[in-house]
Each structure stands twice: as C-alpha cells, then as structure tokens.
Image (cartoon, rainbow, N blue to C red; front, side):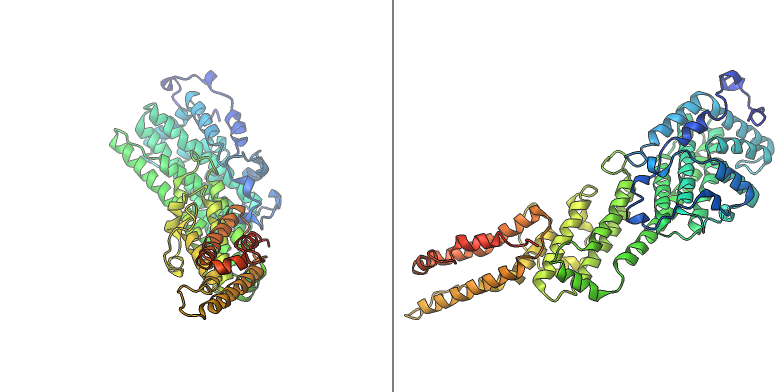
Length: 523
C-alpha cells in the first residue's frame, strides 16, 4: 500500500504519513457491518436457497483468490433487525476515512495520474493501481481485478453459484458502493477540489456498476431475488442521494454523468426485481389448476386462501427489505413495485373467485381475502393509496353501495354488500312489503313468516361453519347482517302485533334469531 501511495502529495493534503492508520483498520470494520435483508431470507422470496460452500466456486484463479479468502465476516444470520440499518455505520466509516486523510490521498493520486496520462476514467496502470488500493480496502478488490483481467465481469460465471455465495458478494459490493458514495458526498460538503472528486467518483462508481450488469446476465431465479433486491435498494438510495450542485462546470458534468449511470442501474435492477418476483409469484400461486382452487375455496369456507398468504409474503418481503416499519429508512421508490404486486394478487383472487358457483361463498371469499391483503399491507400504504391499485374488474364486480362499515375500504364494503344480497336477499324478500285487503291477509302474512323463518334457518345452517378469520371483520359482518335482517323482521312484527304476540312466545322471536346470527362463521 505504501508503494501505491508514494505519489500522493501528503503535505498538500494537510496530513502526514504517521497520521495515516495502518492498512486493514477500515477493512476489518467494514466487514462487520450488516447491510442486507438477511433476516427475511427464510420467507417466500428465498424458499429455495442453497448453502454450498465458497470452495465450489468456478471463478477464475485471479479473482477466486480474492473472493474465497476475504469472507465478509458478517454471516447472513447477523443482519440487523432493521434492514439496511448499517447505512449509518458505513457513513461513519466514510467520514472517518475522509477526516483521516485517506480518501483525499486516493482522490489526489487518481487525479494526478489521470492528468499525467490524459485520461479521466482510469484504464492506465497508474490510475488503476490507485483504484485497486481503494477497492481492496473496501473489500471489493475482486471487482476491479476482474475488470482489468477480462474487461468485463461477465467472466465471473455467476450462473451456477450458490445463493449464499452470491449474497456474500452483493453484501460486500453494497458496502463498497455505499462508502464510495458517502465519501464523495462528504468531500463535496467540505468543498474539496471538485474536479478531482468528480473524476475519482465517476471512475469508481462506473467500475462498481459493471457488477450490476454481470449479475443480471445470470438467470435471476428465486434464490437470487433477495440479492437483486438488496442491490436495487442500494443503488436507488445512491441515485436519490447523488444530486449534487457544484460551481465547477467540469465537475458538474461528471457528477451528472455519474448520477445518470446510477439511475440507469437502478432501472435495470427494478425491472429485474419485478420480472423475477412476478415470475415466482405466478409460478407458485397461479399453477393453472383451477379445479383445485374451486375445491380449496369451498372447503376453506371462504377463508384466507394459502396463496393469498403467499402473495402477501412476497409483498411484505419487499416491505421489510425496504426498512420495515421505520419510515425514515423506507425508500418511497419501492411503492410502484409493491403497487404492481398488489394489483396482480387482487386480480388473481378475483379471477379465481369466479370458479366458485356459490355467489354467497364467492363474495365472502373476496371480502376475507381483500381485507387480509389490506390489513397486512396497510403498514406500507394508506387505504386511500391502496384503492388506486385495485384492478378494474374489482370495481365493476359489484354495484356501488352505501358505506356499510365506515372502518372498511370501499372495496370491502362492495363485497360485503354483494354478500348480503346473495345470502340474505331472498330471506328478506319473503317478508311482504304491502298490506293485503280482506280476510286472507292473516293467512298471507303467516305463510310469508313461515317462508322467512325457513329461509333464515337454512342460511344460518349453511353458513354457520364458513370462515371469517379476522375477529373485527367477523363482528362487523354479524352486526351488519343483524341490522339488515333482524331490524326488518322487528319492523314487520310491529306492523302486525297479532303475529308478534305469537312469535315472541316461540323459538322464532327476534332475540332468538339474533342469537343464531352470533353463531355464524365459526369455521
């Protein structure tokens, strides 16, 4: 390292050699920082992870020596409770590297050799030697080394590597890119020589972004989605933060190019996350066996389908990887991605519900499952936002209705209204709505009352063991049914006191029937 830094004008940077920390101080610290969403790798996104050892790598010998010997020192199980909680720690390291004078030495050495060779982005042995020192001390020396040897990271043969191996590479890459970015931002804030900083930043970040293309050239299967998601969040954060405004036109031009490269890398990673995730969701949830769906909806009593839980598992994996319930760490740029996944899930549930021939059960299924999705995802989106992502078929499935339950979304209210019409409409219709003249009216009313009681008991018996798993939703649904059915029944009896006197002495009084409604949905 001393030989590589011999050309750095130490005095001009205001630092002496004695003040510079020995090599490895930063590297050991960097390796202890947890940066990925490792704690959620046992969820749906990573159900097929393998755990083969690094020794099975088929990398080139030059790169393999770097990769196999420099384990990150932070196992996947040691990730912090909050995803990317290591960002602040990496920022501290970057600030220390600047305050120690180390980063300034790198920038000045690269700038001096670039000017001497008439180059701006590396590619010369001297400039690459500076970058090699920088990358090695960030635990990503293999990136530059492989670029120098092969001209492209495509030669890394990522295709057949284990998920744990790839995740380790990605975590080290995230640390390296984050510290590089934070170091540049720190030097810009301290008004270091802008052109030198911009040139060094452009060269460093462009080399780091080559890994994105190499990784995406490999087949992004389920076991690699977590790694791609981690990279996407890292680059998205970087592109969001890398909006610099400096006085030097030359430096501003290079900063703008670097910012554009970060946005381009972000977009490629987003496309990969979306296509890979949707492919896995479709593979797991929409297997084409419609007959099985119909059976499961019926036997499940309209409850939460297993594929609904799987779909929410995919969505919440993204949510947790984006910072979980910590809104300050949760990047807004995941919103569109999660929106698309919710849209797909709700459209799938609506399509599969059509397989159910019992309309009452179908609407109860949609009510339960849409309510479950909203409840689980509300920590990411407000209900008002989520209403924007419902597929069009859901909006046209039911006629608009008045709000039955103010605490529920309009979609849940639609499903509830449709369920009430399908399940209890015929029960209510058996109550006559007009007065019949003459002596036969008592017989008509008594006959109608018998039909009402029969329809009521049949419906209660059929739906007693249907499922409404959420206690709050179950209470709301029972209350709405009671208000709709029992209230009409009471009003009917008030209009016919001669029948009320008979009914109230028997097993069909309003209070008794209301008690039966309290036994619904016990499945």
